[in-house]
Length: 126
Length: 139
Length: 109
Picture 1 (cartoon, rainbow over the protein chains, first blue to last red):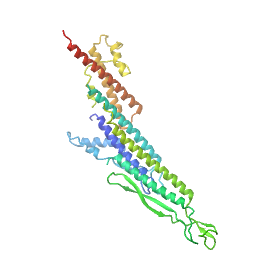
Picture 2 (picture 1 turned 135 degrees about the horizontal axis):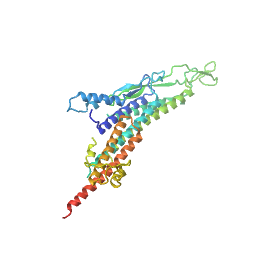
Picture 3 (picture 1 turned 90 degrees about the vertical axis):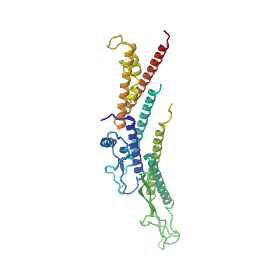
Picture 4 (picture 1 turned 180 degrees about the vertical axis):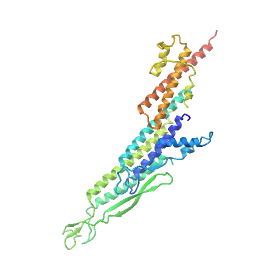
């Protein structure tokens, strides 16, 4: 398998993190909506495997970004036993914790991109 | 619409919904003692609010909106107050079916949800800002 | 992908030392390496470049792991900072070498 491009991977992760953030937002906004089931994006590892498979399926010279436009599926979360009588499955604390994780990962992501971009520019500058 | 802007929109709808909920709670609390004005008349009937989620086409997020504001159908408790203008011939007055403790608990829940939605807005805004910052300070 | 950075060093060198910036010079100044003491300057420069490239590749590997989601934050930060230091040192050396060469070439015989 070819080596992974750092910047492409970073872009993909930040897209995934953004979709996760919107899923968390939906969960928090609908924390009191009867019958609403909490959802979350599929794990990032799965997304990478799926993309690798898709990219290999197309023709060799044709590395478009259709895979990234396919979007990340949002699936209902597994049942953790905390269902309210109103059939709402949102646990506010879990959502806030996930939001914290998203933030940390995003900060690391932008920091890495910035650092390598600076290094690249430094090497190219005469 | 990209996902972070969608998150902002969804969280904003959450803020709106929780504000409505707080408004209903404060109406109930303010009218917890509002009896009728003629003998045997019905007092203030407690209001209830229910939410519904709606899929927003442009952003792909699950917005929340107020489904309905209806009345609590439970019976009115009666108190013995012969001097009240709404007292019937036996001196009993029908009081609003508002339980102050329940309303206070609902209010703190609504506050908590409101704060959580606010956190989401702040975080989404910060993430967008971080992304734009990548371009800044290019020497 | 980051081979673009590595291409600034086409020479060969082999210094030791954990600290990348000091390590680059240690190999040149203190001949504690097991190689023969008479390491030529060109070889010393090559070693520094190789070490820089290795540091950069290491940092890239750790960063890719971090983006996938399973690396210690502190490790990533340390690796990337080391890489930045090594790169800055290597670029400084490169600039000096180039200007020295130009100066020599301008010398009248």
